[in-house]
Each structure stands twice: as structure tokens, then as C-alpha cells.
Amino acid sequence: MAGTLSILCLLTFCISGSFAQSSVMFNAPKPFVEMPKDPPSQTPPSSDAPPTTFLPPVAVINPWTGAMELGVNGAQGNSDNFNLRYGVGVRRKTEDNVFTFDSIYNFASQNDITTQNRWFTIAREEWYFKGTPWGVFVDGTFEYDEFRAYDYRVATHGGVTYKFIDSVQTMLKGRAGAGTSREFGGPNDEWIPELIFGMDVEHKFNDCTKVFATGDYIPKVTNFGDYRLQIQAGFETMLSKEYNLALKFGIQELYDSTPEGRRPSDLNYFAALIWKF
Image (tube, rainbow, N blue to C red; front, side):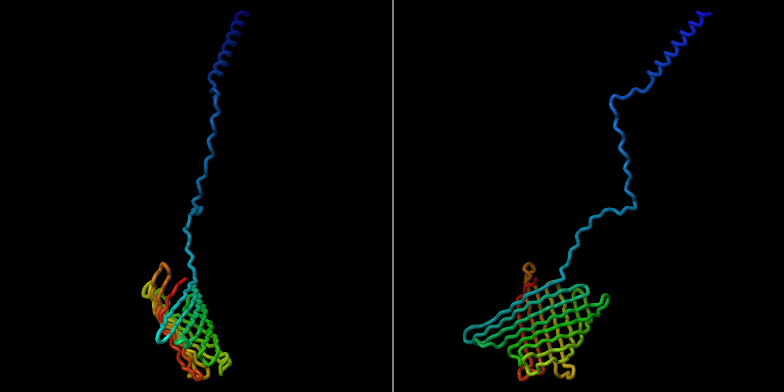
């Protein structure tokens, strides 16, 4: 009996040892190199997020333009004469504002005797109401003429303006208002109330050629027969776009119905070379 128990114990020990070895043999072997972990998954961008875009730069248009003009002619021989015309103009135009400034100097002589010496300057500012052709304006003028009965004249006006036509090719506008003027150093050296009615027109045939005209009728408030006229009209064409050179032909009339013993009309016709900037 004891021998039988001894044999059973021996068999039980051998079987348990065999199972222990088999469990070690069938375990997964540990790798010699640690494998890298998978990178974290990236969340795709939300469909609601606005896309990133790159817009081209927007060209900024300079509202300022300007021009200088020069005209010279003369003769020497049996009669000597010399004529000079010099002018400068500046313009600023935006959607609801227009500013213009023009200054012209004329000089002429014959046989060394001065026959003309005149300087005329006008500036005008216009403000337009958005969405309508209506606006308001204010202007000022300065005039010097050696052969007038006064030393110099200044005037200023204000009123309303209206655009009848305002397209790429054609512009037509009118104005009406009131103001005052004074002739310094003359027989009527006092401020005179006056009205103003004016019109501007310009038509472009193409990018190089245009015609233009501007005029103002300025009567005295108490006497419409006592008035002044300021008129200019002309034709302008480009000679060189590369050098911004143009040629202008035109006339300018400054009329005064009360010249105080002088001629009422001063009419100038001219041809001038223009440099635009």
C-alpha cells in the first residue's frame, strides 16, 4: 500500500512539472526590439471652417491729376512781338467730390511795349449727395489785368449744382448760386452782391481726344444788365502717352459790361503744349 502511494505521488509530480514547462514554452516570446507606437490620428478640418484664400492686391486709383501748359510765339524784324501763355491746373475727383484749380497767365508785347499782362485764377469745390445728381459748390476767383480800371478783382460764390449727364464719355452739369465780388483799386472799390449761372461740358471721342467748354454768367443782383462773362472752350489731343504730352487749342473770353472807359471784351485764342502729371 505504501509502495502504491509512493508511485502515485511520483506520477503526480512528474505531470505537474510537465504542465509547468509546457505553459512556459507556449507563452508569446518577448521581442528583442521595442516596436514604435502608432502616431495619434489627426482630426480632419471641420467643413464649417472658412477656406484660406489669397486675394490679389487691389489697385488704388489716385484721385489727383494735373497739367502744365505752355504756349509761346513771336516775331522779330520790321515788327517785334512776343506772346506767352502759361498755365497750371489741378483736379481731384472722387465718388462724391470734385475739386478743380486753374491758373492762367498771359503776356504780350509789340515793339517792346507791353500790350497784355493778365493773370486769372479760379478754384471750385463741389460736393454731391450720394445716389443723386444734386450737389453744392463753392468757388473763388482772382483776376489781375494791367489794362483794366482796377488793380485786381476777387470774387466768391456758393450754390447748387446738378449733373445732367455723367458718363464715361460725356459730362454735362450746371450750377446756380450767389456771391460777391470786389474790384480793389478801382472806381467801384466795394463788395458787390451778384448771382452766378454756369455750365460745364466735356466729351471724349476716345482715350486721346476730347472737346470741352465752361462758362459763367455773373450779373449784379440789382441790375442784370451789369454782368460779367467767363468763358473757355477748346480741343485737346494726346501727342505722346509715354511722355504725357498733349496739344490744346482754344479760346478764353473775359467780358465786363462796365469796363470804366476800357474795352469790355478780352478774347484770347491759343495753342499750347501740355504736360500731364
